Image (cartoon, rainbow, N blue to C red):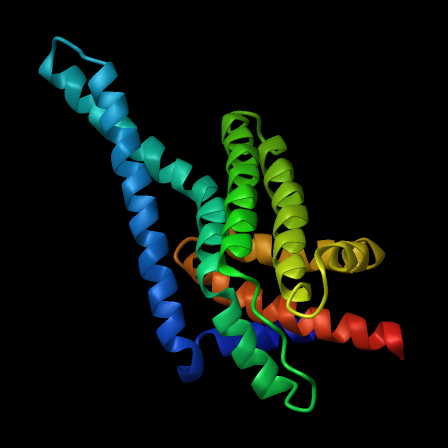
Length: 222
C-alpha cells in the first residue's frame, strides 16, 4: 500500500498529470475563495460594532478564523473537485500502469454528479463537526483523521471500483477489504491536512485508489 501511495504521489506532479492537476487546484482554490468571502461577508454583515478599532479587530479575527476553517473545508471541497476529473485521471492510470487489462468505463455524468454532491454534503457536515471541536485538544484531530480516513477511502475506492462493476458489487468489494481501504483513506487524510499540498488531493487520491483497487482485486482472484 505504501508503495502505491509513493508511486501515486510521484505521478501526481509528473508532466503527464500536470494539466489536470493545475485545473483541479484552480477550481479548488476558487471554491475555497467563494466560501471564504461568503463567510467573511456574513460575519461582518450580521455583526456591527460602533468603534472603529472593534470593527478592525473583528475583521482580523474573522480572517484568521476563515483561514483555520479552510483546513477543515479542504476535504469536502477536494472531494467535490474529484468528481470532475476522476475518470480522466483513472483512464490514464489504467492505460499506463495496466495496459493489458480491459479499460474501465466512465460513470454516466448525472449519476457521477449525484454521488459526488451527496458525498460532498456528508464530508462537509463531518468536517464542520471537527471544526466545532477545535477547542477540545486532541479530540478534533482524532475526529478529523478517523472520519476523513473512512470517508475519503470509501469515496475514492467506490468511484474507482465502479468503473469496472455495479454499485452493489463495488460496495461489497469495499466491505471485504474495509481495513485496507480505511488505511488507504488515512494516507489521503494525512495529505489533505497539509496546507498547499492538500490541493493536489483529488489527483493523488484517484491515482492511489485506482492502483489499490487493481491490487486488491488481483489478490482476491489469485
